[in-house]
Amino acid sequence: MSEFSKREEPTGVPGRYWHVVEEGSKIFCDLCPRACVLKDGDRGFCFVRKNVGGQMMLTTYGLSTGFCVDPIEKKPLNHFLPGSSVLSFGTAGCNLGCQFCQNWSISKSRETELLSENATPEDIAKAALRLGCSSVAFTYNDPVIWAEYAIDAAKACHQVGIKAVAVTAGYITPEARPEFYSVMDAANVDLKAFTERFYQKLTLSALAPVLDTLKWLKHESDVWFEITNLMIPGENDSFEEIEQMCDWIVTNLGEYVPIHFTAFHPDYRLINTPGTPHETLIRAREQALKAGIKYAYVGNVHDVERQNTYCPNCAKLLIERDWYELGSYSIKDGCCKFCKVPIAGVFEKNKGNWGRKRMPVILEGGNAAPRYPGLL
Image 1 (cartoon, rainbow, N blue to C red):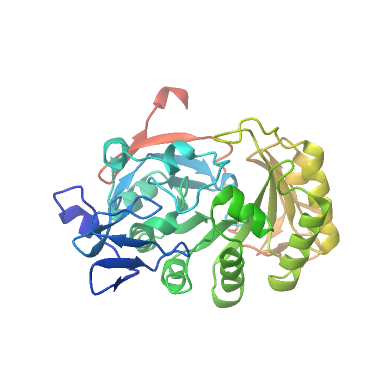
Image 2: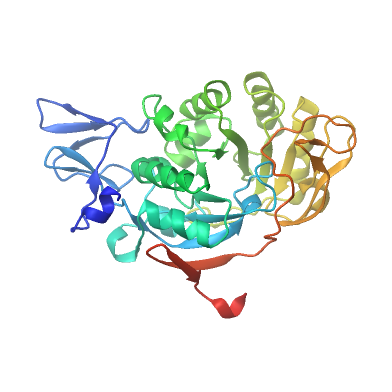
């Protein structure tokens, strides 16, 4: 039984990753590089971690803004159990302040207890199993800020054979990183740009800790991870910046880490910024391939050719994608069916058949059912 299931008040559960400062009058959050110092009653920048009587509390443990079954490619993960379904959920709050957030109604929420659904880690694992999902994704807002809940949910999922996926900005401290990622099977890390100026101006955070997380994932963990770069016109889409980013990836992470260049759509506080031209995504992908990256994709646009996976050795089509719908599939035993070269990723014997469906679900204990069954 999880700690959440035993509590009676919606005040959260004791959090980890903190220490006392100033002779006990304040506490210091050690979870993310923002390094919030909180006096009694204060909440961190993320809003979900709070000093209650000199102790850190995670106020959103066991609370979700909703559940949905998605294709794994939507995370996006193209090399992790292709075609499979994933049970996705998030909570509220965020430790970044992105001016272009496309989940701002969740990440900026200040009414967590009023807007959320209850679900224990065991409930989530049982629901994923019942729904036939191969994995559970901690997404919509960054799971780093609710690490204790994500860790417990991942452990519960592993007990029933379900894998765990973190969709994250990678903004986490070296102290908290090992425990968080020790239970994650895969991650998509949002590398929002490749300049400190962008991170400080448009995310209210810093680039360096994200790069440290990426290097740690590659060299200190067994987590399969892919990178997403949301391209915002005039902010992070210059030829020079993409070239520098791709060169850094090849040098520090190797040439086999997939990268997804995705289109920005005006939202939140950047509603007057135009959407990303398709040509910008095409150019970025070409730059990545030229730099030596073997798996580069475009996203948030319809572009079958550039969303497919090709063998880096013989160039044959391996995984055909039309949005999130898979067509031909030519990976056998983790290798190209044609030339037998290993393909980086985590692959089952057969592709999944979930397709492009998006199915919101209701959780009631370990039970789960489509929220709108008539739409299936």
